[in-house]
Image (cartoon, rainbow, N blue to C red; front, side, top):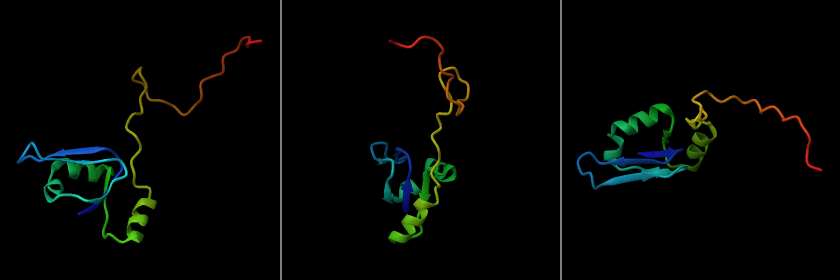
Length: 98
């Protein structure tokens, strides 16, 4: 299966724990058949981290990439556990350096 991956992903073969498969961010290419059957692969396809590509033609790859199907980063919280906002912090009032 030909896929595009937007994040770093690692799979461990359930039948042979010594056999691993990694996809770096931006990976486009074939995956082994055992990876296609892995539960984690299915989950990543559903959340949009991995996108299957119908063919290896450049046009199909470009169309899949242009659709913007990549997921945003999951780190939406700051150290306090509250969701971050897009607002900029208020400027400090006071005397500047001279």
